[in-house]
Length: 446
Image 1 (cartoon, rainbow, N blue to C red):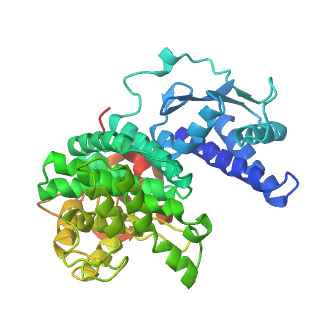
Image 2: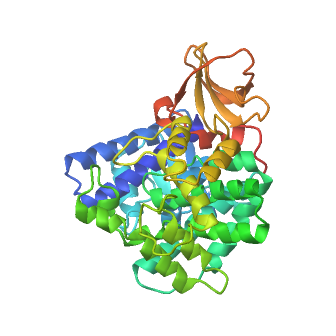
Image 3: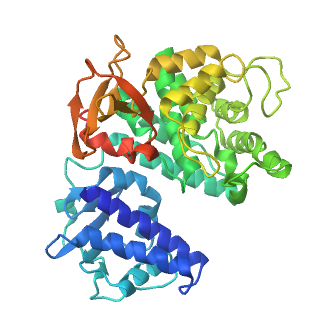
């Protein structure tokens, strides 16, 4: 409950900071957004004696002394931006005033150089020392490798955007960490790969595709040295989208011919940038970026002028790419359930996708992939945490909502024996973020 309120504060702060950079204070929408930030700040601090302090330490966000692991990753860019503004802590004292909310949003957006002291919102007055916050419960290696991969993608994207050179050292280091943690914690990794971000879709999508590709390559028996090369290509497969206008990427309707032509250039743009940065032996990452939208039957884009079939890595990444894209909400379409995404892969098997990759992917994630939200015959809602290879209809699950609609703050293991699955819900439809339940799912180690 407390983490949910802190996440609401961060979400509204991000929205308010963005709003102030686009519209004046007297704009009706600005007042509405600031009002929501004020409300979320009050919700967070209302039942607390004294103040609630959100502290940022490295990759981690804390509420007072409690680590907020999911929020640390979900709002990774906002936390980085706050750190760049010199913000180490934000203190909220009930009732939060309207003026202080505006001052906070203006400072976070870079529109003001300071925030008045002594108000209901204060900066860098947190009472906790680094030693009091750091502990064995600090953000897990898996989540840290996810966060560092996001940072690498931002750095590469910035270099491409300003036509500066870069090398693949950072990407190589990041995927080595992802490979290590994905192989060590496959179920936790698959659950974390349900992480979504509307504001930084391409970056979060790319890390998710990398995790899914690593897991699929492991199933295919790739040796570790080749697996790391594959992972670099998977992480950077969509980096060419940096060259595509944001208005085109976020266009809510059917693209016109000019917009579609721009989209279709991103594989070439990405491949060219990667190839220029690659050291000898790393060129295959550019091949993955170039081929990930070329279909198994030779159609798709770009048109391939060579006779050989697409690279094994490209065919593998294309499968993971489609699955994650379909299960993510975009400005122009809703998110599909994991089961529906698998159906799309099956329907496209042999035309869009390599059938061997599709069947291997389904074997890996199971009929009900990790993170699936299932409505049972008794009305309860459960989340899949691990597949049961011997009985696909009985995956390991946790109860997240009781038959009478009560959401459990701490989900509980639940037996599927004798239960009937009647529906599968999207996270948005259920109002639940599967990746947010990773800490309490029982299989994430620090």
